[in-house]
Length: 260
Image 1 (tube, rainbow, N blue to C red):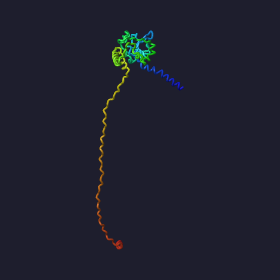
Image 2 (cartoon, helix red, strand yellow):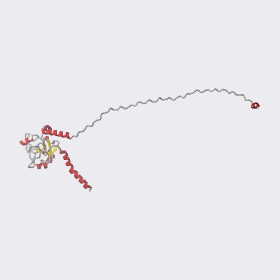
Image 3 (cartoon, rainbow, N blue to C red):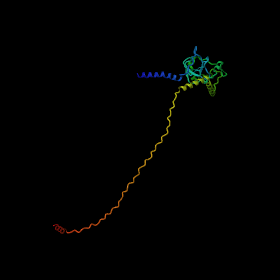
Image 4 (tube, helix red, strand yellow):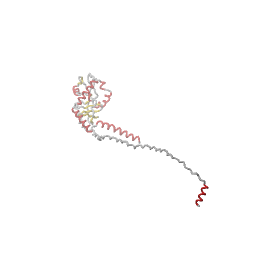
């Protein structure tokens, strides 16, 4: 029971994650999708020299196949799909192959001439491309042939190719439809950005000066009173005069006689 539960969870994650990731990357709300292209049969393609990008040559629009996706530039915006005739989704960047494409490739295709060399391009059926494009890219199939169908072909040095990419990038940015699309993108970004309210700062109050309490006046320290030392009074002892004791017997007899 527990194994069945975890198996169900794993299957749900496997089915859910790729769909969510694709939708998050490609779907962009706010831009209309290009009109569909009707083909009576799956189109044949040719490979552009110096690239692994393929193009449908007999259309009035540029429809490329590269890295497993179909690519289409419409109104200054890029779209891609796994199908050549439906399922287009907005792509927010310029695909990496595009600045390697010579802007005059249609003229070279018409004249069978690639920069002064005979171009014997090969039409590649759709089914053959779908089956082999990945192996051709991983094995560097067109480089090993050293031709891309061009007689006496000589690859450009990497530095020259880099300079050409920069020049084509500048020309691409000057296209009116691309500039208009950039303005639309900027407007959408400004509308989506949440307006952050700046927090109102409270008025700074002057710091209160600490009230310094004045030390209370201490009561005067009473000096301990010195005991007044009275000089000892001298008592003069006068000598008591002792009367001579009379003879008790004689005296008493005389008093008795007087009383009588």
